[in-house]
Length: 315
Image (cartoon, rainbow, N blue to C red; front, side):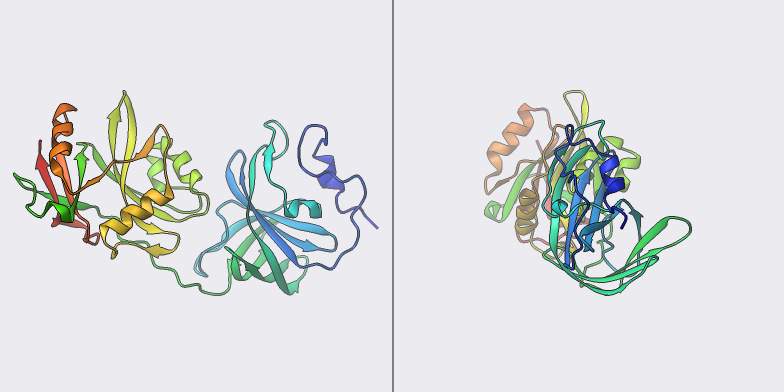
């Protein structure tokens, strides 16, 4: 009987990688486990592995599992992996095959509806991945993955920013607002899906931001400002998070969701925000040479265009 792990073993040096490299051929098995690993290698992708006959049959999925039946994703059929890979996570050294950081994104069990050399139809039962999927071979060695059921997901919101209206003085009911610096930069909404963002076409330095969110879908609102001689994305709102539109929620809840998401790096950061008292914020804006402050009603939804829920107050 051929050794199903021969190809896997030939690509790895057990003395150089922390990956499991079993010396013996796999034992036959009849389990139904699966694992999805998030793999930050030369390019971000997700590895879907299904237990079958004592090994994990594997596909690399560059954009992750499709969220709805309307989009198929590429799935590259790779070599079978050992069962120990169900729990493997760690750093594969650079220069080694698959070098990069690997984490377990989800794990669980699955049901087989069909399994042939050209088509695999399964139902996944995981915490993050669940539903009916089919993997099918196309031309040559290419495979695709298609979602067969339709989870409840909100569509992406319109990518038009909410804009403030200028006022000479802060609002009298200051306790109903949060006050933030007006940065004087260029507004940018950043849609992220499958670890990628279209905003990186113009700003390539945003690719790591999208990759840092993994498979999480999001729409971030902020602006590009120059700090210390470099462009930095200052973030202050979250319009969409992992299949759920947040635009109808009050600003205080969207802001809390953004802070919980926690995007922070030298080239992007969450803007500071202070509820209730505009005085110190205006003084700090003047001292830093900023154009003013923006007052944002804590109970306001996100409404594209210029309205009265966000107010620009000059320094």
